[in-house]
Every structure is written in C-alpha cells, then in structure tokens.
Length: 395
Image (cartoon, rainbow, N blue to C red; front, side):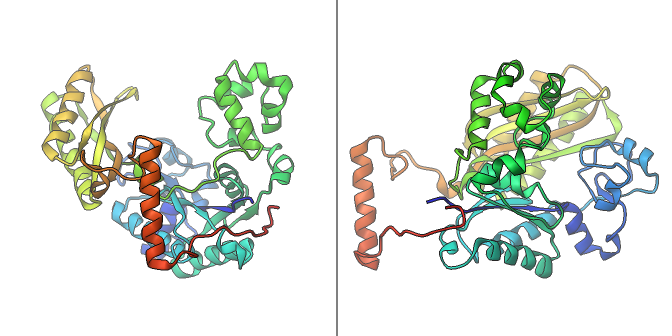
C-alpha cells in the first residue's frame, strides 16, 4: 500500500513571524535583512514587497533601487525558532513520523491516521489550525513520496492544498518549467534551457536525453526520472534533520576588513555565537566551516571534518586554522562561521556500546532484534505487533 506524505511549507515564514510581533507590518512592503544598511541580501520579502520585484537573495542595494521606502527589519533567530517549535509540537498531535526539512518546512507521514480520517481533512485541519492558532499561513502538498509532496506544496501559494497521485504526475507537473524541479540548482537550469529543455516534459522526453546528459550526470538524470515515476523515497526519517543539521551565522560589515587580527577577532565572536546555539541544543558537531566574501563579491567557503566535539577551544582553533590557510589578503565585506553534521550529544555511541544500528553482522542484528521484540511483548503482550491492511486515496 502507498504511504501518504504531507509536505507542509510556510508561506513567507520569516515575514509571517515578523508580522506576529509587529502587526503594523501586515499588508506592507517589507523584507527581512540587515537593518540600516545597504549591504547584505534579502532573506525573505513580504508578498507586498514582491509586487515590486523584490525577492529573497536580492542584494539590499538593488532592493532599495526598486523601492526606496522598503522597510528592512531583523529579528533574533530565537523568535523564528519559537514558532518553529510551536509548529512541530502541533504536528506531533497527529503523528511522530515528522521529518524537518528546515525551520519553515516539514514532511509528515499520516498513513496510519488516514485509516480513520480522510487525508484531505487532516491536511486542511493542520493548515487551518496553524493559521488560526499561530497566524502562520502554509501550503501543503499530499503525495506518495517526499519528492512529489514537495512538488505539490509549491503548486499553490499562499494557502494552497494540492494532491498529486501517481496518475496525476503527467497532468500536473509536466507543464512546469524545468527550473521548478526540486533539486535542480540555479546554475543548472539555465544550461538546460539553453539546450531547449524548457519544461519538465522536455526533460523527461527520451528524445532529449542526450541533451540533458550534456548538463548533468546520467546517475542524476535517472534519479530525477525515477522521482517523476513515483519511485523515490517514501519513508520519513525523524532524525534526518538532526543528522544533517547545521548552525551558521554571517555578518556583512559596513566597514572593510583587511587586518588579519581584526578578521580573526570577528571570526571568534561569530564562533562564540554559533557555539551558544550548539550547547543550547545539546548538540555536538563534526564539520566546521568558514565563509569569506571580498569587496568584489567573490565568496569562498571552506570546511574541515573532525571528530565529534562540543569543545569551544577545539572549534575556535579549527576556525582560525581554516582562515589562515585560505585568506589571500583580500579586503573582506562578509565573514561567516558554520557548524554542520550535528547530532544530539546523547546519541553518540561509545566504543563499548552496540545496538540495532551498530551491530556489524546479521547474527548480532538478529540477536538485538530478538531482544527488542521479547522486551516489547513482555510489556504489551504477544499480539501487540501486527500488520494491517487498509485502503487510501492513492490506491
């Protein structure tokens, strides 16, 4: 039987949160970015600001050319995290099968709940509650895989609710631009368009395969083809975001930085900022990175993978070492520090521990599984584990 996956994607999340804290912003042209500065880029633009051609990723200087009266505001990250947590806690009222995509999106498996309630009713209820209880508008896609659910949620914004069954894929998706394929990068789709691959239908047309392979690898091409055939991942991994979580902070400076000592001092300030978030979340990190951007907008990001740590001195030393290895005496306008591959500290497996996931061979795994089953049956009875059959709208 097919799984039923929801992809819940907030509409202009950062702007929505800003409007919650300052209702006067509603229905006005504003953006999230660096206040009182022409440097940096737009993080999110309100829908009113988008009417002037202002969008995320746009340099602030260009945004002000489009709208001189644009209101640019900045809020502490904790404000956004607060509403993200409210969002996740609401979803947990329906299921624990939740995979966080980012601070403003999540995938939810409602297969089990759909045995007793219609998926559309569940999705509409979640959407309505988020709007009424927290003033957070969202769009929801419903499909049999994570990829298709993500594609569905992008079809109608704001406040959309879209179902894509496998039989609907051709009708609803093939007409979209190739740039709408989730996972196709900003550098890739223009190259495809140059070769006449304008739509998803063009991309999937076997007659165009050789043209597509001039731009991307065959493995990646086949992966995307399978996704549009409904053959991609349909399993929610609640630990996915923790396995790939990252914490980062960047700062764009009104003054120009060209002193190594000053840059290192600023890097250490940024390091302490991300470190506080690391400790607050009870995480350890495995990958440390820095970002440097010069006055000509040339940006480099360099990283190093080490043993898991939450030691400030170790992290700081790695940041400074990365900087000294890669700094070319440029005058900088932006620097950043990031920590990636985070996991909860209590999930670290010690050398003398093993469980279902660290067992090295089948016999060990069978033994662990057997012990788990015996323990479960001892608590809840031998009939507590069973398989069920059900029908869904995806049959």
